[in-house]
Image (cartoon, rainbow, N blue to C red; front, side):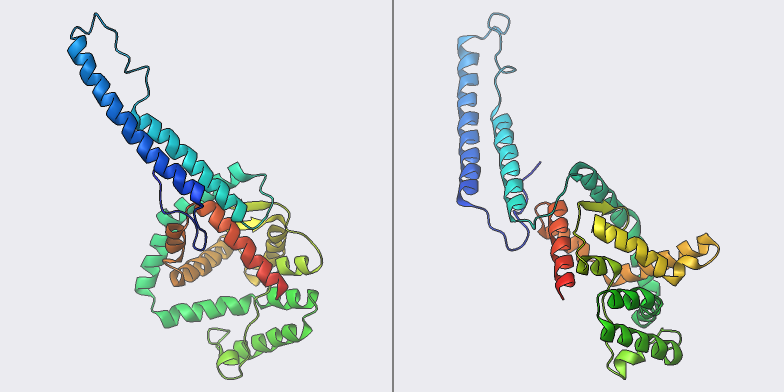
Length: 286
């Protein structure tokens, strides 16, 4: 394992961590030099390999000792990340890491190539229309969530937007409610509604395809699916195809975001967990 750039943006490596790194390099260099001198002396004093048994296999090389220091440094950096991370129970960490890696491979091997190909053949106005259409379909999720949180004015605005965009926006492909009436959409879901009523996060979990979540948000996601009209399209294969179209269309707007996030993070798993919990906490307090 090599040492990459240190932390997620905003964190700093502490002085004792830098000291460990310097000691690792100096010690490894000194060890390697001593080892070279010892080998040279061994060849002069004992030219017969059979007469004098070699100790090379028993003694660690400079590279081995540097690798040990590097592993210790990696562990130290991970501890620093854990200290700075937003506190969330993560008892399923081994399983979550495996699922995180699965989603990572799924993105690079399937989702990103599909989104790139789709973006090449679908101009941005078309993709924006598709995005608006699916946002309009998801109105029941936001409408119910607003009411459950006591945001009745926002719920009324969602209903107004739905009626106006469905009528004058070609079933929601356009967004005249925003462009002409100035009615901005809300960003609410049942996970936020549960939080407003005192339901805690629970443990952190990583869902296949959906990514980072918590027990509370996963329960909210189930409720969101029941309120989404796409779920009731028959046969089920058609419903799945429609959902896949929505995901692929949305991914076409976000190409490069995950790559930049991953490149900037020392540990993408911890960085993703921290970013998600911070984001959800901010949404709940709005």
